[in-house]
Image: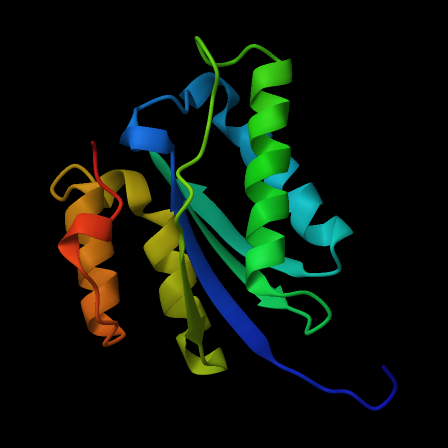
Length: 152
């Protein structure tokens, strides 16, 4: 698209199905690299990736040629297939269907990058559900607790 200029920064959050602690530190970096490749192959730019054993945060510079829902589908289906193909999880690995996606201005990027880098430390004191509700509230997103990413 000639003469199309955008600056779209999206912070995505998604969890392992039933928030099981299935992401192992032994292959976590490889998973992050694989997800980075999916993002790059779709024409977007990864700015930061991180998380814990039950969820992932991704900050990316997004191009307007793809919807967020299509990108998230590519990330989640591609990475789950990769995890299962490599036998990294006992049983079948799946991501929860839901996800969060939040827009950020350029001036906030360094804050979000640091936030994602410090995920493991942050979750020594706070659960994923507490964190996710905090994010939703900070963006003024109305939600119903029965649909929040939680264990069944």
